[in-house]
Each structure stands twice: as C-alpha cells, then as structure tokens.
Image (cartoon, rainbow, N blue to C red; front, top):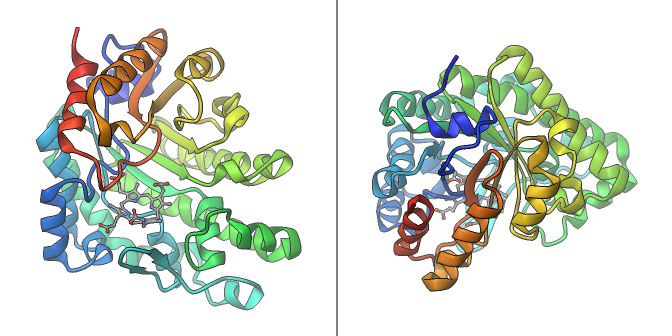
Length: 344
Ligand code: CP3
C-alpha cells in the first residue's frame, strides 16, 4: 500500500521535505466560525453529539488553513459519558462527572461493549468526514488514554495535580485497577468503531501522563497504551497510531518500542533538538511548538517554526503544537505558522 497523503507517509516512517502539519484543538474557540456553530448547537456536548454540526466544525480549520489532517471533533470524556458517568460542562470552568471513589461507583458503570448506542453520533461524524475531506487530507480519530480519563472520572472534574486519582491508586488499588481495565477495554472498542467508520489513524491523548512516576508510569501509561495498540493492530494491521504521553520527559525515550506506537507526540517542555537525538531515532515524532506563539506571533513565531523544522528534519516529523491552541490565539498567527513551515 502506498500512501499519497503526507500525514500517512510521515506516520509510515518517511522523512518528507516539508513536514505535514495539523494542530491540537484546531477546531475551537479562537475561530469565529467555530463560535457561531457552537452557538447554533447550544452547548459543547450537544455539538459533540450532533453529526452535521460536528462535521462542520471539523472541516472549518481545513477550509481556512489547509491543514494536512482533520481531527474528529469530539472529546475524551465522551467515553465516561457513554459508560454512564453523567458528563456535563460548566461554562468557563470545565467538565463535571459523577465520581468513582470506590467499588460502588465502579459497579454503576456499564460494560465496554455497551457504549456504542450512546456513541453512534460520533461514528456518524467520522463517516461524514471520511466522505467530505479533500483527498490529500488525512482523518484522525482519537480517545483519551485510560489514566487521563480515569483522573477526571475519579475527581469528577479536572484537577491541577490529579490528586484524587493518585489517592485512589495508592489506597484502593483493586478499584483503581478495575477502572483502568474497564477503560482499556472501552477505549479499544471505541477506537475500533472509529476506524471501521473511516478514521485513518488514531491518537491516544494521555494529557496527565507526566504526573505518573517510575513504576506507575510503566504500569499506567506505558502498559495500557501497549495493550490498546496491540489489540487495535491485531484487528487493523495497517492502522498507524499516535501516542501522546504529555510531559513524560525522559519517559518519551523508548516509548515507540515499549508501546508499539508509530508516532510519539511531544509537548513543548522538551527541546526539538533533544527529541531529534532521543526520540526520533525510534520512529515518527509530532510536535512541538509552544501554543503561546499562536497568541503572540511575530518574529519569535517565525524563528521557532524554522528551528523546530530544522531540528527534526532528519527523520519522520509531523509539525504540531506542544498542546492545544488556546481561545485567545489569533488565526493570523496560525496562517503565519503554516506559511513559514511550507516556505522554501
Ligand atoms: O483537537 C481537536 O480539535 C479535536 C477535538 C478535541 C477536543 N477536546 C474538543 C474540545 C480533543 C482531541 C479534545 C481532547 C481533550 N479533552 C483532552 C486531551 C487533550 C488535552 O487538551 O490535554 C482533555 C483533557 C479534554 C477534556 C476537556 N474538554 C476539558 C478539560 C475541557 C474544558 C477546557 C476548555 O478548553 O474549555 C474540554 C472542552 C473542549 N474540548 C473544548 C473543545 C473545543 C472547548 C469547549 C467549548 O467550545 O467551550
């Protein structure tokens, strides 16, 4: 199979003269057209579960900027919602869910095969996108990694230090491990369904991997990713997979080999030069411009794009930010980033 889409070529290990580019949270509140569609949908979750409008917001940054990939518009917390965790969003604050703090909370959740009715609108969005994207644009599906999703389910909200999840892990290992097992199984079923609907690659977002240290990093970041990737590749042998163990630091070293990921996405706490030396030799890397440049722009943005591109030019690279774009970003800076990357 030869790929013609630049993103899929990079994922297959090709070093391209100009790296493909997309951006985490590329459909989001920094875009006026996103805000308009979101207002039409009512709230964020209604937008996620409305296939026509979710398709529309996924396509908006593709039309405006010509990115090399579209990422399904959804959220990592739709899996707990489908498991029965009663997700809602408080405007200006973030997500809320019913908490899992012991065996009773866990017992109320559904099984990993019972999520599909609830998530059917998401699969429909993927099918819509598979038929609507320009031929050179790749379609990325995604899910949260089990640890990151568990941190929200255990606390019932976002937390600065993932304290409640660490506390459950350290005080009631049986409940914590059972929740992780449920999330591993549900994540496999969810991503499998996205691939069947037309996703060409999938990304596992482990946004809070950096708070796991030593044996915990191995057991709850590496091992779940390895199991999810192995089972997805058993079902879909040619599926490329991106892993994002955010703020893993030294944990990025060896992550391709330990998990079977084709691409490791890196945040901006590590230098591109360090990534070239320690991570890129084992496979494709994605990243890692600091999101703040999308707010400030100018010469600093231009020189950073050039530096990162040059540092990672000797191996497979997908250009991206180190984390999601923020609502205060200026769309003109996104265009400047892309123009700078694609200049000769
Ligand atoms: O990248 C994309 O454009 C695809 C869509 C996507 C969203 N969330 C849309 C979204 C993806 C891949 C995510 C992942 C996600 N969601 C993560 C992991 C990646 C990361 O950023 O670390 C996490 C931790 C979440 C959970 C989540 N969703 C939080 C904590 C919040 C509230 C914070 C905020 O930015 O408002 C969300 C909401 C959310 N998810 C928005 C978007 C566009 C903003 C919602 C809005 O329109 O108000």
